[in-house]
Image 1 (tube, rainbow, N blue to C red):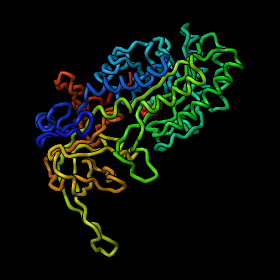
Image 2 (cartoon, protein in one colour):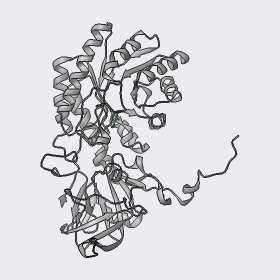
Image 3 (cartoon, rainbow, N blue to C red):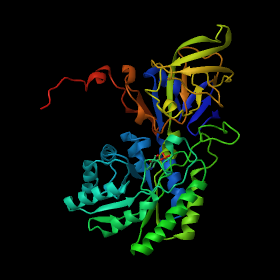
Image 4 (cartoon, protein in one colour):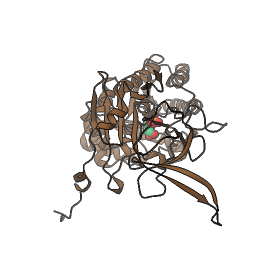
Length: 453
Ligand SMILES: Cc1ncc(COP(=O)(O)O)c(C=O)c1O
């Protein structure tokens, strides 16, 4: 038996996910489908908790629900002892449905509606993150009108670039957070309000941050600010929420010599060691909150897709001369199922489920079934091509690894393709369906021509 990932093994020509024969499962259910691992969810939550709590007792882990807010998944996270970070009233509602208590929830977001703030304050959640002075004033009004104090964490843009994909940077002048120059004012407003209770300072530098150094810089800015706030306003800032962003490795090695954000040479332990050492040095009594999403969810699932068609396309120059020839594999998971590859050019490893022991010796272009020319997967190591066994053919199953974060959340029924089902292998080796495939009826269930009441 060869172990490929924490969940995937290959034995006698079959690929197993937590002991379940994936090709056999693919013969019983429609493709594409996600397959989650209960054991991995528990192990990943435990690893993050251990990494921080063993070094800094006053640490709290809030799973970033945006990474995967499937109810069954959330229940596993809760059972493993993490709290929950939410980014909308809908996510808060799902978190409460999954059994999290309001006291376990932190609410982020750059444009929360009054209704969302009311729901959060009325529920009495642990922290509402205020993303602007405007929102802070609105939160103050909401708390006053409800007669319920709101626990607030101003989110500060600490002006630190995380070195990740530009779409995932969140603390260097983009839309998120309060400008550093207005941060003191946010704390002053909070301290002066009878309806707001200062729960802490919030920051989040981005997702898939592959180095420790941006965290240390962000921490430095935040701790300096904290000192200033306490000195100037005579208040205590009880907690620092450092956000999420710990990277996972989607590649075994960097694609480019200078490194890239698909390769992470660090474990959550490495981040925790550096962060907790700095907190211990400067603020040993501070509560430290973290909001990891990707590092908990990414390797908990694979996406299984079927090759539906193949073709050869010849690339021609202006004079019509053939300059190259591509072998294409057309699979049934496009960006309707797996959005990040087109949204952010995200890379996920791809392997053959049908031929797991055959050498990956042929270059293929791999594309989804949708109508646009952009519904194509990027390649390995800076090329447009994926290496798969040369014998790969229609009917074969392929699997994308590390497909557990920011995937189910982003599915759409584009091109009237019902969204995919998700299954999970339990620790008792049972296969559960944790999300149903949409039906054809679902595709029109919300369409209507109804007069406004
Ligand atoms: C405020 C906030 N916290 C936490 C996260 C989770 O980040 P990650 O999934 O990279 O850990 C995000 C996502 O970018 C976020 O916006």
